[in-house]
Image (cartoon, rainbow, N blue to C red; front, side, top):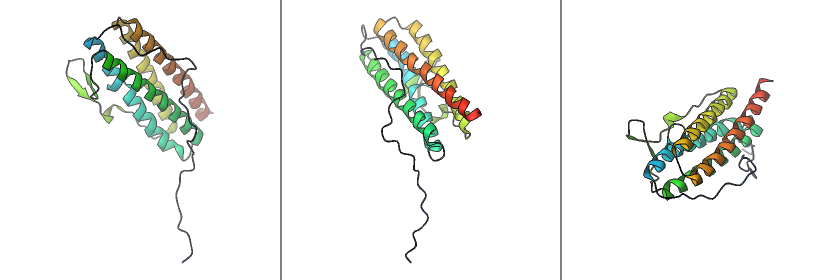
Length: 184
């Protein structure tokens, strides 16, 4: 009667985890003037197929699945997710300042709004493939941000997108290092 049942527990402690990001300040979140077209472009970065919402959800899912066997890797991935959350928050502020709304929809190329969906995620089972999916997601985000920088003629928005790109490039570097560890 005094026997304890077997208990499964995740011993990975996430206490003290900090965002994984470039050690540079973000510029102030401000815009020159309201602009619905710019807000719609940023809504794609906020919650489109390639977006901060997708990155956060994908990283959190992968971190949870890795945490019981690869605690160190899981902690780094959680730190990357935290940086993506900061990007989401800053993009949301920009969208609101530009006169847009935060309803988790983004305009598609055909002009129709589409609500964010987990269908946008890549959730492989193998840790190496998780890291590769993260690298590809970061590359896609950088490409999309660069395209939006060309389309948005607001120096304040450009400055913030440029700073976010630095984080995304840093994430690629970190994920590539983790991938090399897995391959060795």
